[in-house]
Image (tube, rainbow, N blue to C red):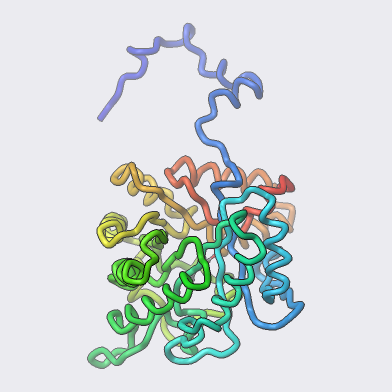
Length: 338
Ligand code: PBG
């Protein structure tokens, strides 16, 4: 559709668009998008042990923390006004069905209890709900031989997803974020919650999660690299867009409260599509590890200005339609050091 703006607003020289840009005050007045810390979620990685703060070499500024260090961290974060933290657990032992994730004494259950104890209602605790960090094979569920090819067994995985969700709920998570791209996962979690007096607990679904090379550095941080194959049989193909709308719709029908597009920078078109088709649904975007590492690497070389790039990127993600952004820069933005 062609729109003729000039017939409504006049033309040059009566109209000069530069008037709305001539100084900082007027530019800020007409801004349509602002970045505020309370819309940002900060991912954190927790592992067992004491006094541990292991740097992730591919993600400068990101660490694996033991629970005591995590508690120190959240005591700082709780006063910064950020939207929340997103917790990933790295268990001491991994097995074929990720047992640590379904135990009330597993790493994530212990971490959530410790964090909630420290921060109470001052900080939202979101939990990533997936099995790739917990399985010895590194895939996002239980494996099965499906007529000659080894793959994630969808429906068997749904059973342990429901158990895992209840572990997170009992530990005190404020919001769960299932990221496995298992068909029916939202329905399974919703049913488990509703049958166990957690009907109030919301779900943020990684609805349109693409099989992406941008997750590379995260897999070092979470120790979740698949030991064989890849995730293309469950995560979305980057060459599809319309499927994202079906994924979102199914999740909403199953009871998702917030939907997500992931990664962010290369998928702004998907966010825009979701926003236009589902204008009333809260939409999140995950500004993933590879997006972070690329900017860090280039800024370390002095090739780009990190602060400008980060602010421009987060603005673009908001502009594309995501109100909530998960980003490793959340703390820096909130502390205004970026
Ligand atoms: C799965 C999960 C992944 C990320 C978030 N949740 C990795 C994957 O799907 O392989 C990636 C996040 C990032 O790259 O920052 N538990």
